[in-house]
Each structure stands twice: as C-alpha cells, then as structure tokens.
Image (cartoon, rainbow, N blue to C red; front, top):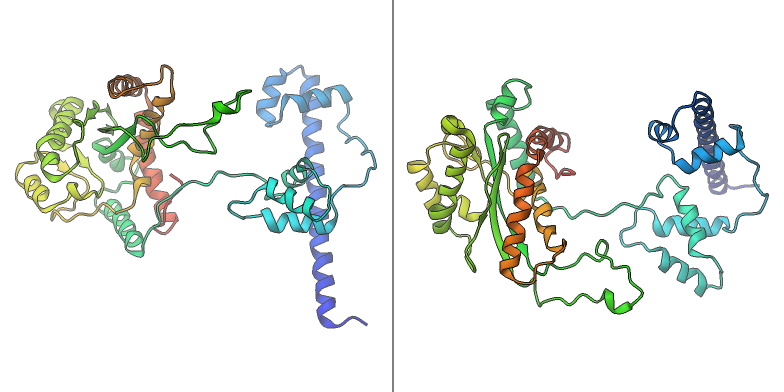
Length: 381
C-alpha cells in the first residue's frame, strides 16, 4: 500500500511525464508541417534562400529534406541515450536559471564521481530543453523605491502635459527635444572576458596588458534630436564636469547646437539633461532661470527637477556611446591621446552621416511605454 505522500509524488511524476510527451508530440507535428512546406516550396521552384528566410530554417535543413524527398521523420538508430534520468535532473538543477553556471564545471563534477559524460552530450541535452537558450546577462542599474516612484511620476507628467504617447501632439513635442549626455572614451578600456577574444595559435596573443585603472581617457559631450546629431564636444585634458564648467562651456555649446539644428525655431526646443549633480545644482538652476532662452525638458513649469535618477534606459543617446567607444578597437588602433582624438572625431562624423537619429528619437515613446508596463522598473533598453 502507498501512503499519501508516495501517491502524490508518483501522481506528479506521471503528470509531468504526460505534459512532456504531449509537448514533444506537438513539436514533432510542427516540424513535420515545416518539412511539408519545404517540399511544397521546392516543387514550386522557390529559391532555397527565400525558403530559408520565410520559414526561419537553415539551408542545411532544406537540403536534407530535399535529399530525402519526404516530410516523414527518419527512424532513429535505436541507440539508448547516454544520460540517465538522475543525470538529467542534476543538469537541470545546476544550469537552469543559475547565474554563473558552467558546462565545464558540471562535466568536471561528473568525472569526479566516475561518470564519463562528455561536454557535448550535456550541451545537446540542454539545447533541446525549453530553457536551454544561453542568454547574455546585461548590467542594469538597481533602482531604489524613490527611483521607481520618480519614473512613474515622470511618465504621468509627460502623458498629462505633452500627451507624449499621442501620435499627433506627442510627435510634435518629440521632434523638439534635444537629448544630451556626457561620456568617457578610454584609450585602454578594460576588456570584457566574454566578448573580447583572440584567435591565435600562440597563447601569448591572449595576454592583454592593462593599465592600472582604466588609463587615459577623453570625455565627450553631444546630443541627438529628430533633426540630427549635434557636433561632438571634447573636454580639455583633465577637465572635470562641475557647475562652473557646465555654465561656461557646455550650456552655451548645447544652445549653439540647438540654433544650428532648428534655425529660427530654436526657442521652441527642449533641452534634456540627466540627473548629474552639475546639471541641477543651485548655481546652474539660477543661471538657467535667468539666461537660458529655450525650454527645459528635465524641469516642470516651476523649475523643479523631474527627470528620474538612475534612468539611462530612458535617454536615447545612451545607445550611441558604445558605437563611439568601440572605435578604439578598429584599425589602426590608437596609441596615444592625439590618435584617440582623431579616431573619435572620425567615428562621430560617420555617426552624424547615418540616419540612426530618427530611430533613436522614435524609440523614446517605446521606452516610456515599457516604463509604464514595468511599473517604473528598469526596462530592456
């Protein structure tokens, strides 16, 4: 006789097994349907590249189906699988939704227990699972409750005052915003272990000699609007962004760029700034209220700061900085600060000539929608 606990365990096991079999059967039916469409397309003499794109399958799959000439799945070899149920459970527990999980570490654990399982066998099993897609972890700022509340208030302010989500009135406002920011470009940036790889027969090629800290850098400032990108402002050597420098240099630069992009309509343009301290200090706020001639997007009508902190995902120009910062890896690689300056100017000229500013500005509406849908939390941008 089974006690109630054993009965529940077995019932759950058979329920999970039934769900797995049904999902597998559904997947097989779907694959057979795709093979039928491939054969039908080949009979109609549709180009294999067109079939590959429209059906989202590889050219190798199309060639295999063409060679077989039938949508039926080939019979298996009958060989028993290498992984036992216990081993599959161990793989799932170790890898599923676990940060820092490693196939190599898992193979090592199996070998230490005397279980001779290859990395390829584990990899094949993982790729067949619904959760088996490897995803890159993106660094995102952690928001406090105040940040989240500020983001909600900012969204409500934009929708109530400017109707920013409205296709007509919102678009007219969106076309008159200059999004600005400042960012460093390092001569010797710290490498990302996952992305920076060197293919070479010599192990010495993988050694990356790094300066202590990040090394030399240039700080740049720029803006993007529906009318295009501004020019690039490069800070003087060793210059720190503070209130005085912001008033004397950057604000006049941004205003001159607004006049350049919008001509006679420059007084109707909004200047957007993030929450850096020099952007909203008392001295800067006083200067803006007395001398700034156009509009300010990061303030309300009473000159109260409303742009939420820790919100780089809401600023479209943040997506431009990686394009500029990665220029240090292009040949010829800059070796000193002057070469870095020339490289930055050259890359920024290419960015200005592109039409990417249109997509960046239009993405601001989607960023706000995601901010609303995520209840003020950080968005995928």
